[in-house]
Structures are given as C-alpha cells and as structure tokens.
Image 1 (tube, one colour):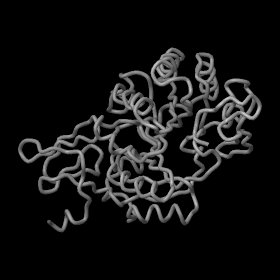
Image 2 (spheres, rainbow, N blue to C red):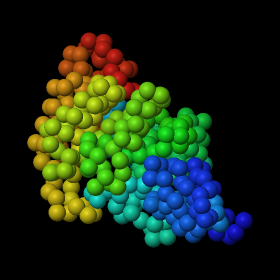
Image 3 (tube, rainbow, N blue to C red):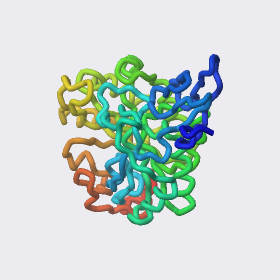
Image 4 (tube, rainbow, N blue to C red):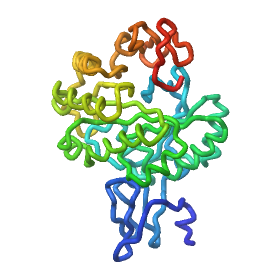
Amino acid sequence: MSLQTEKYHPALWWKEAENGKILCTLCPRYCTIGEGQAGFCFIRKNIDGKLYSTGYGKPTGFAIDPIEKKPLNHFLPGTKILSFGTAGCNLGCKFCQNWSISKSKMDSVRSLSASPEDVVALAKKQRVPSIAFTYNDPVIFGEYVIDISKLAREEGIKSVMVTAGYIDKEARKDVYKFIDAANVDLKAFSENFYYKLTSSHLSDVLDTLVWLKKETDVWFEITNLMIPGENDSEEETKQMCEWILNNIGDEVPLHFTAFHPDFMMIDKSNTPAATLINARKIALDLGIKFCYVGNIHDKTAQNTYCPNCRKTLITRDWHSVLTNNLNGKHCPFCKAEIAGFF
C-alpha cells in the first residue's frame, strides 16, 4: 500500500475498465476514471488501479440547524440537527447555491478530520436527535454515510439525506440502508432542464423517488427550487404535481422554494413570492395534502394544516416552530392521522 492510498478510504461501487481505468458505478454518471484522476464529483479517485474516496472523514464543517431548514416539516418538527457535507458533487447545477463547497476539490477547500465515531459523538455532545448529510450531495460520500448512519442507529440517533436523488439503483440499497429520512431536490420536471442546467437526467431522480416510496421505510419530502423562466411555469408545476400524485401519493410533503442569483446564473432575478404561492395553490387544488413555501417569509404557507378538517396543527415562523398541536401523529380536532415521523 502506498503512502497516498493510506490517506484515503477504499471506495465501493466500481469495476475495472480497459487500459487501467475504473468504472465508478455509484451514480448514473458512470465515470470512467484514468490512473491518478478523479471522477466528475472530484472526490472519487483512481489510485494504482483502485478507487478511493478522498472525501471520507473529511467534512468541510459542522452546523447545528433547525430540521425545518433541510427542509423537513414532518420529521421531528421543532428539533435541531447536526449538519455537514464534504467537497464535491455529482451534479453540475449552474444555479448551485452551495457552489463554494460543491464545486471545490478536496485539496482546494479547508476540511476537517472526523471519523464516523467522531461525528456521532458530536451529535451526542450537542444533544441533537439526528444527523444530516447535506450542503453538497451525500451520494458521493456514500461509504462515509453508511458508516455514520449505522453507528448513529446503534446510538438511537436518526440520519437524514439531503440529496438530488441521482444515484445508481444498486448503490442506493447500500447508501440508504440506515437512513431514516430524506429531502429530495426535484429540480424541475423537464429533461431539457436537467440536461442543460444540471448535467444529469430527470428519469433517474424520478426512479429514486418511486423506489423510496415503494421499497423503503425512509420518510421523505420533496423540494422544488423555482427559477424564473426556467422551471416556474404553471403547466410544468401541474405536470410535476400530477406525477407525484400518480406515482408516490398525496401525502409526501412538497416544498416550493425561492431562487436567488448565484454561481453561473447571476443574471436571473429572485423568484417572486407570488410564483411560490401560486404553485402551492396548484398543488393543493390538485390534491397534494401538504405543501409549503421556502426562502420567503409567509407564515400561512409554512404552517401544517390537517388535510381533513383544515385546522392548524403546526405554526412556523421561518424555520422556527411556534406551536405544535399534534397529539402524537393525530389531529387533536378530528383525530385524523397525519403522515410523518413525529
């Protein structure tokens, strides 16, 4: 073993390819990686004919967040969550709002050193009930996710993926094995948007959403960042909501959030609040039971209402829970069961 390979963690999900190259099978990008090179995500590297994760144990920093910031409104509402990510990402979003992290290579970003045991110990020290893999896409540090989430489960701590859902069908069975909740960023509902603005494909993300619903016990919510002139038409919003209703049901919470100019799309304007409010109305009118807006201040559209009697169950102000009237998982007014992990 070379001094270089001793520094890094052996990667899973790869095959030998021709001419000493490696085929990474973690995500649908399926990078073919030459000796000494890294894949598209920057942190999976071919060293001496084997694949290593250079991001394993190298978080870029930790924060304690409200879980509503992920956003998750139906999973342990009102609690705090330990959040962290690494450098790199397997998508190429031109509108990335965490680009200083996601578009950085490990050798160009100041990172910490933290074993899975360190991360779980920090969560226990901070007395938070859950850990979030976030900021960049945790898919790319899947080995780290598995080891942390397994240990966290043994300690009674929940694990959350904040992700774009762009992951290989086989690899996701491993990565999500000990995951309790996820927020999946459904960036748009057109292949043209995904290909042009994220360098990925819509169908793979939709497949992940269906898999999460039908083949796992992971609680998940969906976020749609609405970008003016790109994915904010009423027709696209209707198509997305109809797909959600037909494929994963009416109880998966949907969050419409506002875009702000960043990275390679600084020429765009902020999303008008009216666009988000209208999108929420479309979703509710079509039959989605729980729909929220984010990145704007609208207390009415951030509250949780009983889909049966329409009484207010949880009131929020930005990411703060002001009141929670739930009786366990039930509406205290009409006794209807509310979807989520409370």
